[in-house]
Image (cartoon, rainbow, N blue to C red; front, top):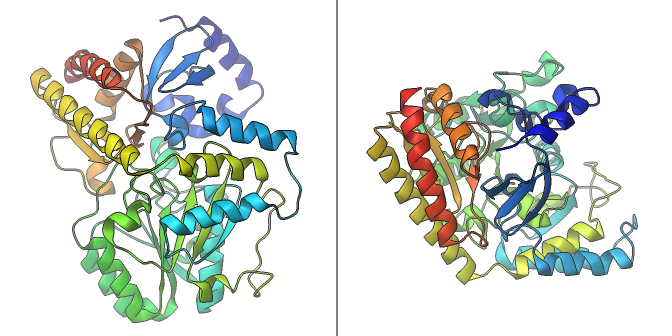
Length: 429
C-alpha cells in the first residue's frame, strides 16, 4: 500500500492545522499511524490520493447511510445549487424535510434546524435550562454529545481516543453543573434524581452509544430513564445525532418505544452535508426565539443544500433498506466472531443494526469502564492489518463502524477474510 502522497500532504497539513487535521480522531494517533488523504468516494468504497481503494466502514462518521456519491442526493443538491446555495431566509425545502422527519418520528412535533450535531445538543441543553429554570444536567460517562463546553465532561469519542478526560478551556464553574454517572446503571440514575431532581434541567443520553464504541442499552434502561425524569420534571434529551434515521425510520426512539421530551439529530438527516436539528414537545420548543425567550440562531440554519440532501436521503430509506442493513450487519458480526475465535483473539463484537464495534476484551463491554479495559495496542495492530488489506475502519477503539446500503455481500466477505489475518496478528501483539 503506497502512502507517499498522503505522507507529503500530512507534512504540509501540520504547518496549517493543529495536529495536521481539522478534527482530532482523523489524525490516526491512537493507531500509531498518519492519516490517509481521501480523493474521492463512491458507494461503499473510498479512494485515497495514492490510488489505494478501501471498503469504507467510516461513512463520514455515519451520514453515508446510502453510500457515497448517491445519485439522487447529487441530483437534488445540484438542482438546488443552480438556484442558490444560501438565502438567510426561509425556503420550502425546510418544510419538506421537517415533514419527512415528523412522518418518521411523530414525537418530534416541532423542530429547529441547525448546522451541526454539536449545535443541536448545546441548544437543546440551553432550551431545557430555560424551560425548567434549573441549571444542572446529567450525562453519562463515555457519551459524547459534541464539543460544547457543558458536554466535554467525561466525554467519549475523540476525547477518549486522545486520553483527555476533560478539556482545558472549559471553566470549572461551567463543568460543575454537569453531573455524570455510568451508562446502563439505572439504579444510580434513580437515586441521583431522587436526591437532586429539583436542580436537574435535563438528562442527556446516547440511546445506543457510538462514541465509546457501540454500547448497547440494557432492557428497560432507556424507558427507566424517561420514567425517572418524569417524576422530577426533568427533561430527557435523547441524542440521536448518530442513531437517528440510521437504526430505524424513527431511530433508536422507535426501536425502544420512547417518546422523549427532546431529540437531537445530525449526520443522516443531512445526507452528508453539514446539518443538525433538535425538536420534541411543542410546549418545550415554543420557548425558543422568536416564539419564546430562549435564544438560538444561525446564518446557515436550514441551508437549502443541506435540506435538499436530507430530503433525498430520507426518501430512499424504507423498510427494505433497513432490513438490508440488518442482514448485512448480522452477517458481518457473525463473520467477525468466527474469525476472531479461529485466530484465538479475545474480542467482543457489539452491534445494533448497521453500527458495530470490535472490542479487544475478554469481558462483556456495556459501559465506559468496561470499554476502557479493551486492549488498544491489539486494536491498533488489527486496524493496520485491515487497512493494508483494503478495509478502512474508524482509527480508534472507541468509535463505531458503519454499514451502508451500498455495501455488498462481497464487501462483507472481503472484510471477514481480511479480519482473519488481522485477528491472528493482533492476538500476537
